[in-house]
View (tube, rainbow, N blue to C red):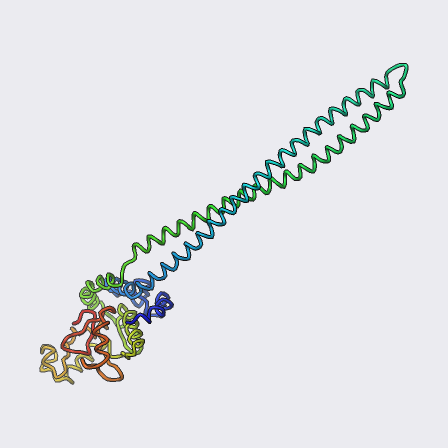
Length: 351
């Protein structure tokens, strides 16, 4: 598989949802109920192996986006803090101005009260001093105007104060929200870092799957039904290997190699082939005793969909073919191992 495939894999591999091709561990349905857990584990590990690079690329892309978002969030927080500081400073000034106007109003009210007292005294004085009464009345009138003007001014500064207070509350809430979003973004970055650190490698997952292959055969065989198979590009295989087989065919095609072949076959067909291939004894003669090596019925991995006889261009492959060379270099990455005595026979155990 060449580097030129990575871009295609990044766009497509993580969203494979074709019925019957997704790993068994993802969403087993009623038709897969009889499949042992080891097959589901094998399928899941192979899926992780074949999508490990794409998964890592996606995680790194997510991390880069999160880090860029954090820069934006940090800038928003800084701007919010600055706006809040300005709003608080403005509020302090407005509050001080309002307090000063209130104090001047208090003084104007005291002045008016004194003027009224003087007027009252002038009005009661005998003999009456008309000039003094007029002067006192004018003083009351002037003090009343000052008092009213300062009341109006106080009402204006009170409105300004309310606006400033609302603005300060808004900027304070903006700071709180900006800090929360910044913290959330920082937390997601930490989580993505952990995911990257915990992510396995393609080779590691493949190695784990390889350790299960013999167990898959042992546990699948007694529980196997045809419902546990699916068809991939015309080849019927066990569901636990469907995703890996499809990827192998796709990647080979991308390298200019066409792969097809015969996968699952019934026990009856195996018996028929034993006869056709001239095995001395259908049930006892070793595979090597047949004109074309053919496993004893009940022992073939074809009977449980875990082996494929590969063909290319409509012909069974040999060691001299381009397809065999490609498989020799890449098939193990997809969980397929060659049976040395049969260039065309590939299975999850090599048996």
